[in-house]
Image (tube, rainbow, N blue to C red; front, side, top):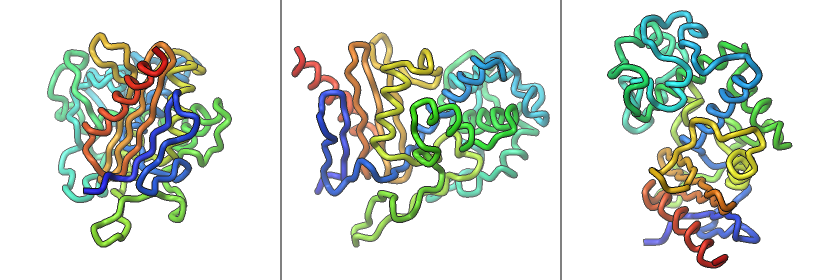
Length: 283
C-alpha cells in the first residue's frame, strides 16, 4: 500500500520533508490541534484580566446552572463532560452540532456531567465547544477574531493563516481510491473551537515553536499534553482523513508531522521517532 501524503517539519530539517504530493503551504485540517488556539486565547484573556480560570461557566453562559464547572476544568479536560456531544453522527459527526444545538445543551449541561468537576481527566470535545462559547461571550468577539487577535497577530501571522473556511483551491485533501478528493467533515458549527480550524503545516510549526519552544506568550496553555514524566509537550489532531502531531522537548528539538490518512497512533509515533532521530544526530 502506498504511504499517505506526509509532511515533516522539524528543528533538524533545513526544509520540510514531503512525500506523496504533500504541500507544506496548503491548508490542512488541524482537528484537535485547534484546541491549542482555544487554550491560548484563554490564557491571554486571563493575563489581561478579562476572565479568570476559576470563573464558573455560568458567569459567561447564563443558561448554564448547577454544574460546578469552571473555565480551568474545561481547559484541562476535568469538567466531567463526555468526549462527544450527544447524538453525534457517524459519517459527518459534527454537521448537526450547530450553535442552536449547543445552546439547547447548555440549559441541561448539569445532566451531562458524569463526574464531579476536577475529579478526573476525560478528554472532551464538548468541553472545548463550551469553552469556546464562553470566551466569545466574555469578549463579544467571534472565535476567528479571537484567534487572529490573540494568537496569530503576536507572531506576525495574517488573520487568514488559520481559518475555518480556507479557499477551496488551497486546501489539501485526501483522495478516494478513484483519485477524487474526499469531502472533509463539517466542523464550522459549535464544535469549531474544539477541532474545526485549518492552517498549513508550516503555520502549525510556527505556532508550536512560538508557543512551546520560545514561549512568546508565556508558559504553554493548559491544553498542551504531557506524557507522564517524559519531557514531551505535544498535541495532536485528527478528522476524517487528516492527522497532525506537534511536539517539542526542553532541549529545543521540535517536530510537526501531518499526514493524509493513516492512523492517529502511527502519526504520533512518526513525530516521536523524528525527535529521537534528531537527538541521535545531535548526540
